[in-house]
Every structure is written in structure tokens, then in C-alpha cells.
Length: 314
Ligand SMILES: [Zn+2]
Image (cartoon, rainbow, N blue to C red; front, side, top):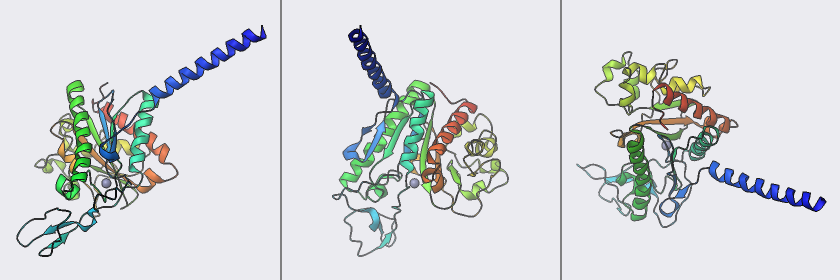
């Protein structure tokens, strides 16, 4: 009897631990490495969201030259970006190579929370090489200084984004690409829709209609004031979800005269196919003591935003 009970117990625990493992495997998102681990991606999305985080990487392959030297501007011509250009007859043009500390981890936490709590698996693309080696958020020349290894890395990141965008287009018709960054300017979020601070500082956003935003499909549901700084705007919804101050939003409509990042190459490059928003998160939100809680709040903001704007498709 004791032996039989023991056998049942062993069988039960073996089964329980097996199903636990299976559940675990289904739960956490499986990432695949891109070219030489320059980036990693999750392509098995089951809804119409892409998370991108290009600037959090810290790997420094030694055979890829640093971008720190920048490009070269010769008299009467624009900047050229060639890694082995000594630039003796021109002047250096500067590059930005600063890492957005823990922005990749923040994006991963957001993806994991979406998956484990809501069963929503986003498409995810995350940079692993340091920005000194490749900048996934620049056009390819400035991004790579035309070094072949950096070019392959850049192509790997963007092919993965394109694959996700095409899949979303085919399957859902519309979707959202969120480009996650970190800034050190101040303790607030900058929400980038390709409108610079001069445009956002205007009283009437209807006067900015000459500039295309990165969320034209969403704006077509209401009007520019509403989609950029109204109730249904991402900044307002972030603030409602306890994520601190966000520009632009209903409470904080105008960024003022300080530095404002309106969205880079990734935010611009795919808007003919998908809505895109850049979020520049403050250091404390992505790296402070409450970074995990903040990633959960960010998830609620994303779901609220996609729901309110009739965008969430599974
Ligand atoms: Zn960045």
C-alpha cells in the first residue's frame, strides 16, 4: 500500500513538474539572436504590437570600428560616413554613441508582462551591440560608417522589424510600433510622433497639419489635437497609469524650450505601413527601484491606448 502510494506520488510529481515545465516554456517568450548577436528578436507575435529597443546594447565586438570618430564633411558637400576615412581635407561631423541604459531590459519586461499576464505576445526587436558599434536608429551610412559587419547587423535588426510589420499588415491590417528609448534630460517622458517642440508648443495643433505624424491612421479617428495631446493620446494615458509626467499630454501639452526628441529613423521609416511612437523614458523609470512596476504600468498604458483607439487586434 505504502509502495503504491509512493508510486502514485512519484507519478503525480513527475507529471506536475512536467506540465509546470511545459507551462513555463509556453509562458516566457523565446528570443532568437540576429547577425552575430548584434540584436535579438521574438517573431511569434499573436497580436499587432511591435516593441523595438535599439540603444540598450552593450556588446563591443573588437573587429568592428568605433563610430565615435564620426563622419567627414568636406568643403561644399554634405557629411559622408566611412569608417576608414582619415578626413584630412575635411572636418569631422559628430555621431551620438551614448547607450540608453536598461532600455532593452525595460522593453523585455514589458513584453514578458504582456505575455504572462494577458497572454498577448508582441513582436520584439532588441539591440545587443553597443551604439558605439552600430546605431539601429540611424539611416545605414551614419549607422554603420559603412563597415561590412555593422551593415550586416543593421540589416538584421531592420529585416526583423520589416518581417514583423509585414506579418501584422497581412494578419491584422493595422498595428503599432513602439520604439523604446532612454533619455537623461529630465524626469519625464518624451512621446515622439515626428512633431518637434516648435510644433508642439503651438496653441493650435491644427496649424501643424503640413507635417505628417507617425500616427496618421490613429489621428484620422479624431483630430490632431486629440490624438497628440487629448484624452486618447499616449502621453495622457501614460500619466493616467501613474508613469509620471509625459510630453505631450492633456496636463503637459507643450514641451517648452528644452531638448525634445520627436522620433528618429525607426519612428519615421515604416509609417506608410504601421503607426509608430517613440517613447524616451527617464532614467528613474527604466533603471530605478520601481523599474519592474513601471514596466507593468507601461503595459496597462499600452493596452488602454490600443483599446481606446480601436487598434488592439488579436
Ligand atoms: Zn535612444
